[in-house]
Length: 298
Image (tube, helix red, strand yellow):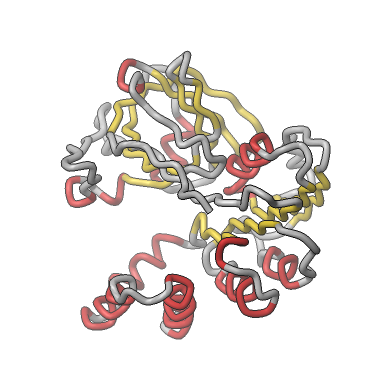
């Protein structure tokens, strides 16, 4: 399978061009300005980037310098950094669109609820994750509201002949968010999860049988709820690693989670970090990492 497309790492100053209320909980922010003139997209539906917000009382974010193609997180206030999906990129207009799930509290949500033309954030270059086989005949896309922008863009990019089953978990019955049209699309909407109750996405995945022919399963939602999803796809359905992707888009009560993680003793945190440098199979590392976080109450 060919490698996912990559773009040079850069940091961009982006200005709000316009905003649009999609639903009471989803706000679209279109960013532009001279700082995005050299922005490059991977073209992959679930590409993500980091958004750097201004500190309270400031109008400009502090932007790091990229050296040797590396984004230096040490130069950034991580409390003002969040990860978002690119909903759309218009290279002609020089615009990047990001859809924000808005709620009470949180740096990103607070900024997005008040965003207006002229406001400024920083963006870095995007990274792609969705990596379906070129010969797939079917796919299953299961996501909650936070992953809706990526879900919609993946559908837009899907070849017409690919049968696509979508399970979209929404916060309420009034969340009638339209999805792009596709000739092979079958959509099921369920009301659950999204911080209002337990997610049903793990049950949905466990109910799957393995269809015939080459395909792909993409699941995105709350990180802890999805811990068992990848294990089920890998160990129960027996899918090879190239046939699925399970992505944690957010963590419920994230601030407390971060506090609890930082409260771990130094040796425990070091041993968790060391897993990723062990050189073992990445899927095996994911298995152990998830098991250890769960055992630690995280």
